[in-house]
Image 1: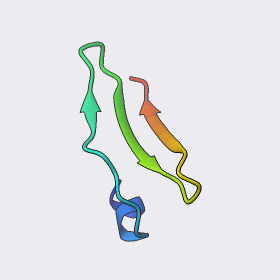
Image 2: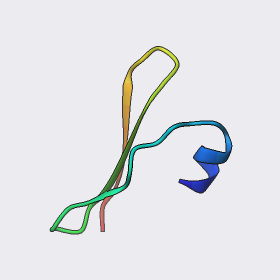
Image 3: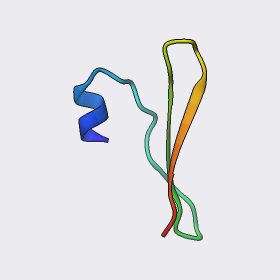
Length: 40
């Protein structure tokens, strides 16, 4: 997240779900929502 923020992206707060998955979202230049998930 730090690398993406340093490159100028505005990220949502990281969400941690009860089953252990982490998720963060941002919008690309075309306005599409991008979701990055880490499955643990």
